[in-house]
Length: 495
Image (cartoon, rainbow, N blue to C red):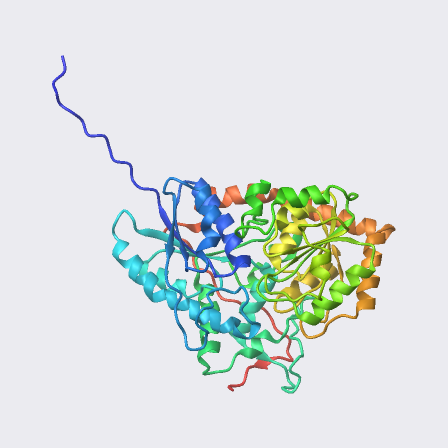
């Protein structure tokens, strides 16, 4: 006989809540969302910050995690006098305004703080913040709330550490007139850095904001990098202290295995992965060049014209993914349009299913600006690289690939300022198409070796997530940088 009494079931505690703050650029947003996906698999709840312009990048991520485990927090893009209205991301942003974009985006600190504070002490409180290393301004928020902040870098560990070293110490060369003189790092051979740090001017609002933004990263609880040991082993072992981070966790390469998931990571593609792969199927194994450059800037018209002319003078089969705003020589795009695609070349205007392309058996070479995400995807696929760095840390990445790892061959070192000669590009591509001899065989073997090293990513990622990844109280703080500099360097002078 029942008594009619009922017993209340215990209410399950809500899953820990983590705030994810991507930087507004595809090359930053895509990998941090890949990492965020691992956190949801561990049972964490996520809120991902976006602005109206970047919210579409979250579409496939939100669709892949239904049921309320992931939600978007869309906030208006902050206005700033140094940054033009209507621009909300790195896509199409001129290089001269990159610093202003960093400072303008930091204006979200106030609105985010207003969103976070009322949740403190409630079941919906945020227990940690995972943010891009371009969002160092989130560090003061975590300090105020008493929760850890994990800084995420989508760049190489080496290049990231060098950037922080420069902005902390502000070294200058003895000869102030040598504006293009690189800074030497005795402990980082083969990795000279361009003069990005010289944009700092004491007292300038944007320059000081950029510097403070990155220096806040040095107080983060942990640093997670989209890297792996086969690529950066020497920077992930003994030199860790010199590179400035006491806890660097390498979890790369971050990329989904499924072609459908991979192709949608940057938003809607200009054509389907199935369409592209069907076209690639008609070529011999390893015979196709895949060409793609910086998503954050438009390829200069002179560079595009030289590349187009060279491609039409060679025997190389190619796929060239160009930005929506890129200017190509008259008639070139029509002759190689993806809709026709009856010849040996295909031009894809807009976002391409690049992961699927680089994993295809016929793609043997990748002509790239050496952005870190592109390097990782090529390495994971075992594809040989033709290095064409354009700016910023891209030269550091290219030197790592060409000089240290010997897994890439340079196309051009002129960057954005100097367009290559067409004859030289023709020579480079003809050698690429020939692709015979011991040198090419060694390069192929090295590319495959790097790809096999990326296969350990799943284990590293599971270890990160299983250990909480630093997403909890009591995570240690990272110490500052102490990279040794050449004795020829001295502190920067006020300007």
